[in-house]
Amino acid sequence: MDSQKRHPRTFSFEFFPPKTPEGVEKLRTARRTLAQLRPKFFSVTYGAGGSTRERTLETVLEIQAEGSAAAPHISCVGSSREDLRAVLAQYKAHGIRHIVALRGDLPSGAASAGELRHANELVAFIRKETGDWFRIDVACYPEFHPQARNADEDLGNFKRKIEAGANAAITQYFYNADAYFRFVDDCEVLGIDVPIVPGIMPIGNFSQLARFSDSCGAEIPRWLRLKLQGYGDDAASIRRLGLDVVTELCSHLLAQGAPGLHFYTMNRAELTSEIWHRLGL
Ligand code: FAD
Image (cartoon, rainbow, N blue to C red; front, side, top):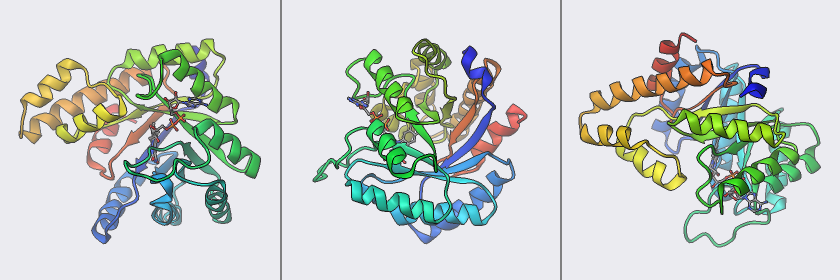
């Protein structure tokens, strides 16, 4: 963990672009609350194949207009180089200097995988097209990406993204701090020296979290899964345990030198701001 302690701490909050006018309103309300916590930036996800292209940009511009920094995500799956060039030009024209670059996941039944196969190719493409204009964050996986052939290869593939020119990384969420500490130590051995900011998923709805964790390869430890499952429809108990567990996780990560936290807010302020206040940030 030693190399991570050298990086200044960065706190950020992630949103997805809402689909409906009600969703837009709800996100505005959440954002107002979260903006008071003064994160370094908000990030806004991007649908595979450019499916949220306009909504991602609109959300980012609205955040910027409110006086906060915002970073749109961009993903290469299902897109041509020409599509990506157009998105980058649009971001650049709006003065956006920070992006999160991902491969993305193809929806089932999608026709084309796109021209760039992996996020390292996307990072190299962004650098080739736009030089140093953007600060580029990428994703990494302390519990390893579900499609990785093995853990070492996944780590090597993460290194390719840094070598291609990424400035920092945000992790997939996890509830086992040791997985993060081990991952960071392994990165240090490989000479990876960018901030690796833990991604934090507050626990609200258990069945949704369980479904999502199964597909993205993030483990809910057995004891936690069974306890949450045992609460059934008792939302108050799920909330109470979730807040305790996630606050303890964040506190441990920061105490051991993690360079900040990135919250997957699911467009809601309540759990994230409660954890924030409990941490005394
Ligand atoms: P990659 O780095 O390309 O890795 C994907 C897989 O391919 C891994 O198994 C890796 O080991 C392997 N691999 C990588 N490079 C190579 C190579 N050169 N040769 C062979 N194998 C390779 N998804 C969205 O659609 N939109 C979003 O906005 C979004 N935001 C996210 C934000 C964060 C912080 C995180 C952690 C994830 C996000 N995702 C998003 C999900 C992400 O797109 C998926 O996890 C996706 O499956 C992998 O994306 P990646 O950029 O990590 O891909």
